[in-house]
Amino acid sequence: MLLVPLLLCVLLCKRAGCAECVVGCECVEDTHTVRCVLASLGRVPPALPKNTRSLLIRGDHIHQVQQNSFSRAENLSTLELTHSGITELGSHAFSELRVLRRLDLSGNRLVLIHPEAFFILGSPLQQLSLRGSLYNSTSVTDLITALRWGALSSLLELDLSGNRLVLLPPGSFSPLPSLRRLVLANNSLVAVYSGTFSGLERLQELDLRSNAFQAVSLEALRELEKLGQAQLLLGQNPYSCSCEAQEFSHWINRSSSQVRDADKLLCASPANLQGVLVRLLSSRSPGCYGKADAEPAEVTLQTSYVFLGLVLGFVGMIFLLVIYLNRRGIEKWITDLHAACRDVLEGYHYRYEQDSDPRLRNLSTNSQHRLRHEPRPPHIPADARITHIPSDVTL
Image (cartoon, rainbow, N blue to C red; front, side, top):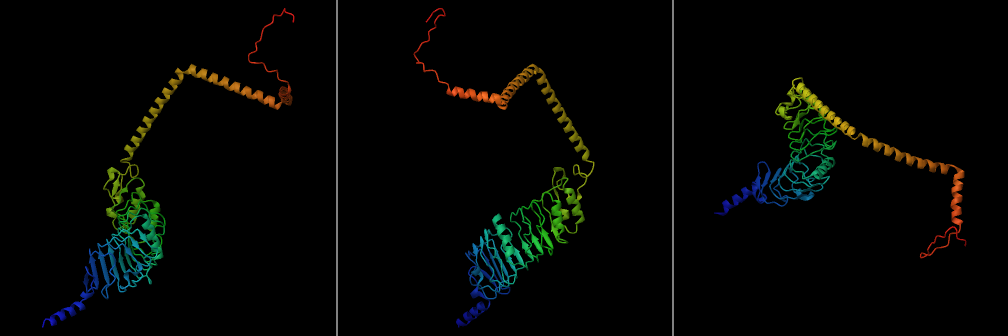
């Protein structure tokens, strides 16, 4: 009698997919989802329940993803490998997932990304999230190469937030012609250059919040205008509301419908403008927006010039006084210097006359020749004495 209920339980569990669920994971039959949270996995589970559509792995220790990691997951359309310590994406790591639409690799420490890591035949991938996953600048270079070689022509959304990006090379996203949403928030970008967003004619949203933008140059404004009607998010940046911000303020007012968070763009400096909306910059900006603060600034500048003139005049007076007190010594020094220069020039002039006169040159040559051929006086011993002989003595 006990065999019948046991058999029924086994059949029901098999029908629900219990027998095929990965150890330590949770399987949801209705949504064909496998969820593995802190399951102490060292690799992607090799055997997944049939018809699995979504695989969510979080908080494990999967260091590498290789081509054969998903050999039995051909029906997978959503893959989340977040905060799992992944450091390497091998060649064709996801090529077996022919219907993959969404890939989330957030919170990893990617050091090595193979140029063909994201290549999937047919380009089914539409959403790619690498939020907080790039380990260093080399990873950024590898990612840009992988985006170019991955044939991601169907990608609609790319999230690169939280990766400490400082600079994006021109044409970084040109291989993504279908991209609709690009998230670059929470990075360290300081400027937008010409060609940074080239090839993104279909972009609908660009998120540049929480970066390090202090000034937005005319080059950056022209680049943003090339995005057409794409919605821009530019808030939470430390904008410097100096004179250079005037054009940026006018541009925001002209493009208020395009800048979605225009009412959240605040000045971070100077101190008297902290918290002021960039689009509402007025006469409080020194020297640029009116006469209220222009006059004090001009008076301060004039005072500085007067003080500098007084200091220079005082230094000049001290210099003249020193020269006057030492006038005799300076006169003597100049006279001595003049005499020394004259002697040197006369010596050069005498040598020049000797070298230029052929007779003097021959005389000098004959004298040297005669000196060389005249017999030398006999050697006088060192102990010899010379005695003076009076003139009246006849030898």
